[in-house]
Image 1: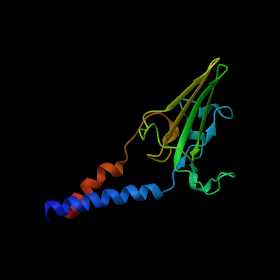
Image 2: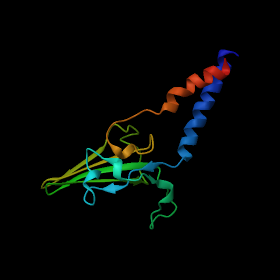
Image 3: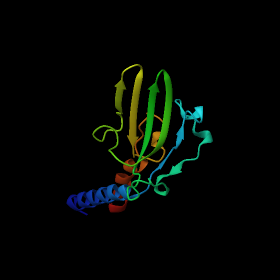
Image 4: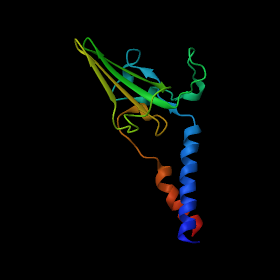
Length: 147
């Protein structure tokens, strides 16, 4: 098999996996620290069930599907609150980079941080970014098949 054929097969597989991931539903943690302190950071997910976001719908936008996970950290009058849920609109991170969160501050001790992600199920558990095992194993798998 020529190098050009191998390159075309690899590129096709990568594009295919990219589009397939867009269609898969994501699962996210869904909790609020004002209802359960284990939802705050450091996050303790041992008592929470992960939520399948394809099962959730917004009443006021029924055709919009959740494609990301969201973590909100907010401080209002000195009290910190964490909210983890499915996200429906926007993009992951800032300009697609999930390592960064959108920060907002206001007057009199008000702070809000929005983090969105879609790299893996449960990615709204914390700030650590993990790369998909599929991304690393795909080239090796294709090399073995095409050899």
